[in-house]
Length: 131
Picture (spheres, rainbow, N blue to C red):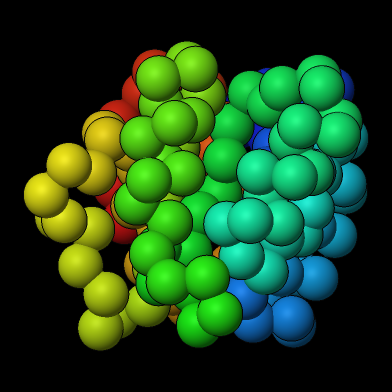
């Protein structure tokens, strides 16, 4: 069974400050038939895009440590409170065990696009995913 088939029509927010990574993630999302919201290089852009869009998102792929926007911790808390599934797309030097960080799946960079989408699909289906 193709896990990414579960993503068709889903709306996925992308918050990533590395342009090439963000572009690849958006392309992979769209290749799965999902709708990419973003990419957003910082938290303010993500909030603005969500407010302007007004449709909400099913899941969010978040880089926790953003160069321009600082931490995405507060955004993660807001999204979790709204029922959004979270996938943390983090580097080796980043910890996903920050205090106050809502539950979510951790996808440690580098990760293939297919594997990242499996993490998102598993999270949307309530299945624990391994790194």
